[in-house]
Length: 242
Image (cartoon, rainbow, N blue to C red; front, side):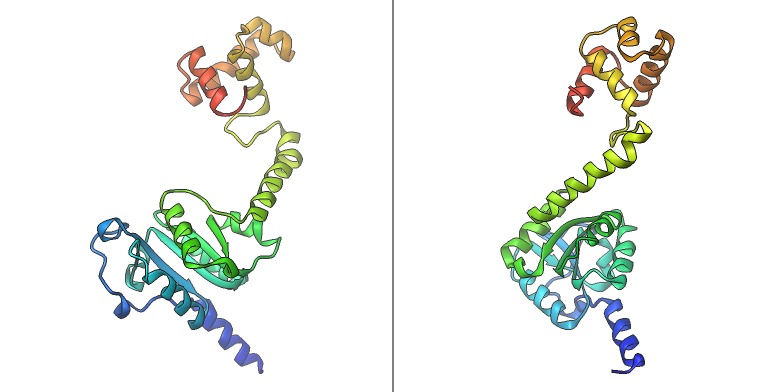
């Protein structure tokens, strides 16, 4: 195969085929939601075979409404169907990420371990391996995304948790930061407040001055709109500080 042929095929794959508007059984009537409460879905596939297979699986189900290319940006869910996550896929995912009203799912043949970080950066909400993508799993994936949920294969979920743990341990902890909106110092002081310690006791336990403790707690209470000690206790419980 010549270099020109390779570039031509790459260009075709980068276009990502979507359902032909003329093949839709019914037109969507309102933006973002299908008629009769159905989930509106736009399919992006890197070749005609993947496109046809995915459309065939979804169009048979009454819960799903496949929408035309002209209205794809108004879909509740975008499904990207590929063999693997390559540069063209990443470009598409980044483009879809800019549309905050649509959630993106990835149906992929081969998922490399290094693609997990890319998936996170591109805002992918759900992943399903193509070998497991029967009709029921696809419908579950689409409905979950429409409800604001995420879906991951078990092994990828484990890798994601390991990734988050590593991020906390190697990047955030050395800087006194956490994955929440609180720094490590702020989180510790809120925890102590929730356990009933007063300002002087918190100062002793944290080795800060009382003035510093008061300033930190005031800043946190203002930023998080904590009205009183009981509210602080509730916040600490919800965020796993106690």
